[in-house]
Length: 271
Image (cartoon, rainbow, N blue to C red):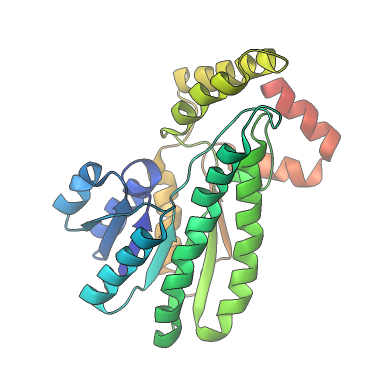
């Protein structure tokens, strides 16, 4: 059965992989992002491209109204838009930290608020929130990013309980290390914030670790997570969480079962 699916952050990386995979499976997919020109392959595959700034309420409202106006419903919402800021807590401005939360949590929350009434009236729907293994663990200089993902995990759990009586299912997807623009977007600004001064050595180590990982090809392809998302879309009774991609399962297992001090040593050694 064809479903009407809205995917945010669909101009690159995992979001684009989700869109192309679900289009191949016969669904009508709306890809939403600021960079509409980078979603033309989604359009060519039969999807629709919508402009969306997840930090702008008018843009979010317009996107939802557009889809409801054309289709009358949204069956699946995939909240994928997000990015990471890295840098020491001391040297990261509160303005930058606020924007991290605006993109990774509050914009996602506002979009969900606008979609839920339509799902509730239909008596069904599915909301898939793309979190991260970073929502269950931590890395040096990533405090604000990890804070948003930890928050998204708890927010999603509460939402799942609230919406269950209305036939709406909430699923969390926790990717590991994925070959996307993530490291490029993270490393440069991190070095600008913390590359010199008291945290300089640590920042350079973290940047070198990310660079080495990319050079050695570490990380899973976005299509690995697209497979998990497809399962979450199609399952009659989806899991509450799907985890996958390079290091996701072992790292989250170690974080839960081996204690803070051990995990601290492991993470700092990796950095």
